[in-house]
Amino acid sequence: MKLIIEGYNKSIHKKDNQIVVKEKDELIYKIPADDIDDITIVGKGYITFDALSLLSRNNVNLITVNYFGQVEYILETPNQKYVQLKKEQYRSSDNEKGLKIAIEIVKTKIKNQKSTIKTLNKNKKIKKVKENENKIKEYLIELEKLEIRDDSSIKNVIMGIEGKVSVLYWDSISRLLPESVNFKNRNQKPENDVVNAMLNYGYAILASQITKSILLHGLDAYCGFLHADRYKRTSLTYDLIEEFRQQIVDKTVIKLINYKQIDEDSIDHRNNALNLESRKILAAAIMDKLHSEISYGDEKVSYLEIIDNQCSVLVDTLIGDGEYEGFYLQW
Image (cartoon, rainbow, N blue to C red):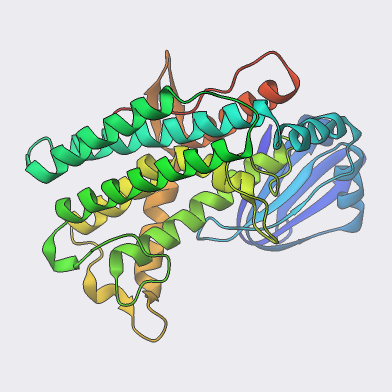
């Protein structure tokens, strides 16, 4: 089971082979350690050394998350079962298997981008957005026809197509948003631009959840297949986030803007970031989205479960017989 401990004045203790959780002096949980997969802490409190030792002996990871959904740290236990997986991940990042994964990630992202602007333009019927949608469709066909070979130049071609599609996608989003927010294009260092500030903050929350899932599956978050290795960059996180940006963050940002829950006055001009109240609104909306259930395949699942499943699919692709298939949802 996955144990989530929220709030203040919580403490984690050991009793025999059990993890005991208290609020002040009142007992909340008493659970055998070998029944716990991982513990996520959202709030303030403490854990005893004995409890940490018990968690370690039972291979239970401890994750702390702040109230904005961002992972602050993860305590992992030494686990030899992940050695072979990590070795295969490193090998695949430089061979044809990794290239296939990279192409699938970009194809999935492009399909999600096309679906997003098509849906948003259904009622507005903006001609330029429809033209962009058709161009994106052409780039998707070009990507699907790409010959897969173990050649470093192929990744440059993939990234080139991804970049061209992103320009078309954000041009479409700028035309679909209200003129009052003055959104022109995607910018990671915005100046008094509420939409980009929201996107930056939303992607940070999403990235923290993806990183958490990556680590819990024994993968190395710093070794990606699409994004190049860079000091302190969790490249695998930035690979997998591409499949979820549109559904979880972009859609949430557009909804909050359209409903005027956050507007151009929500910027803190001292640092060109969202003010505290707007950050709380956006973080709550994204966390609600992550926990919300959708119909996917033949079942109802949450986005968090889908993220977890994509990590499982990646593991099976690396050390099993699976073939990586990205997450695509038409909405």
